[in-house]
Image 1 (cartoon, rainbow, N blue to C red):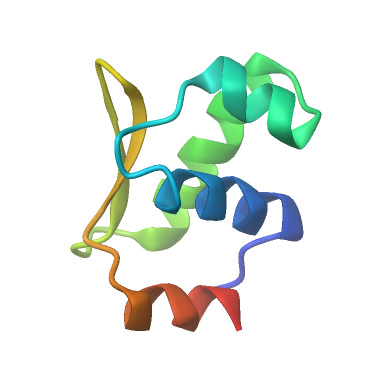
Image 2: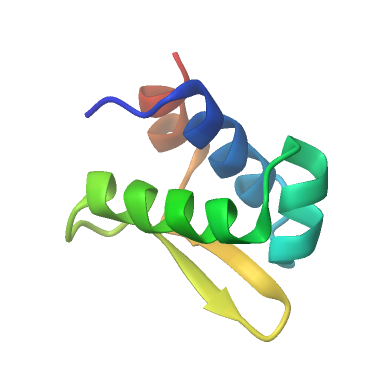
Length: 77
């Protein structure tokens, strides 16, 4: 699986905010539009497939599900 640099950046923000991070804050932090954040989240989830790891959207924003330090390294390195 190949994630783009922008997708990796988005994924890392979400992982490092386990309480959740809003689309607006993600857009601000990464310098992209709200719609692009949504598009990239969909692309990331598509790349992750139907496995135990995915990005969920809850009342506090986006939350990474199923990621551990070891599983994150597989995408980050």
